[in-house]
Length: 330
Image 1 (cartoon, rainbow, N blue to C red):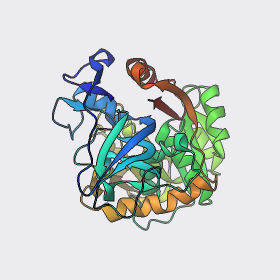
Image 2 (cartoon, one colour):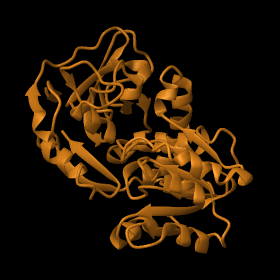
Image 3 (cartoon, rainbow, N blue to C red):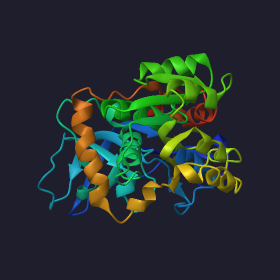
């Protein structure tokens, strides 16, 4: 079989499309034949060597795939050859392994999909799992009616927009450029602010009658992180779940303190919170798979690129031009 191997870290040129032996299932294992593989930020960070949870090198990249059962171990009873499944590396020993034509996994680690499920769409479910936990777990009982979503045109961003709209929240996206904002609106946002040309604070005020938003989901961080607190409604909360522009600068503390009288809050969130809580991860998927099958969530797929052209896929991902999700096809 063919896989994408990483021996040393660096740019897209360090990704090698190589041949490896076909995996054989152990007693409690299955082998999955990939149909679609998601491209996500963790793989970019692993390739660069900056991921906080780096797998040992050499490694096969990839945190998500959808496919069909190709072989089953003798002890596996609930799965059979031909079953449609989704595999997340969050259920595997390390974050990787999915950039491959075939993948061996413990049978308990795969998510069974209904017959006829769109496997290309299913390969995007990791983003929706993050979005689900951002809206339900990271908020930990916090009651909110409105949400401002940074990077709303990206993979996780579009998932948040769709799930928040489905939950009846007022959804405001942030994106750069009119084309990206149009895309965010097509995903269900009530409004989208072009942060390159608009004053975000003024726009948020106009859209909320001066009240501000209840929840801000920020994957950017960086030196300007503190600006979020000026846009919150009283008792509002900012959740930071990514560091696209680096760690939030310490100057966010005075900005937060300036809203002391409004009791605003902050939480950092990572899916690694659930590394030892598989039931919490599965709870999200138990809700998301039916929504996917019913068409209530519809992952937008920007492009499908052959697995052997993985270097181009990573280069494209890093341009910031991808709307929604990028897939690899074996």
